Amino acid sequence: MVAGLINANPIVYEKKERRGRSVPSTADGDEYSVEPIDQLEVFDHIRDIKDPEHPFCLEELKVVTEDAVEVDDKHSHVRVTFTPTVEHCSMATVIGLCIRVKLLRSLPSRYK
Image (cartoon, rainbow, N blue to C red):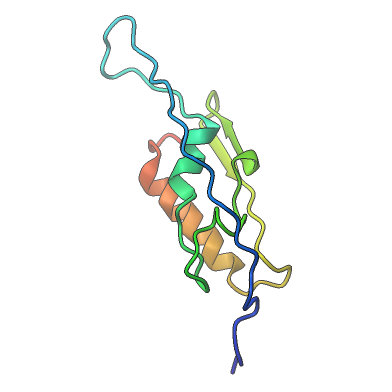
């Protein structure tokens, strides 16, 4: 039985202010055109996911950062590298699955 939290006192960072994104206008007015997805949009989807062990979000614990998000819009591929608060984090798999499910539900189905 686990006696307590693995990282009982994590460092909590200040959340960054949300930045507005410019929405590209479609010149031909085609409502079915594919809109590009960028790094900031992906980060906005995952930044507020709560850590399984703490009342803080992944951004506040610097488990996810904007710089750790890679988007290859041409090939419809997104990669998120996350860093647990401790090297031997038993919740790393749960955090990874939370990120994956959030992106599967939030991004167009063409993304992997």
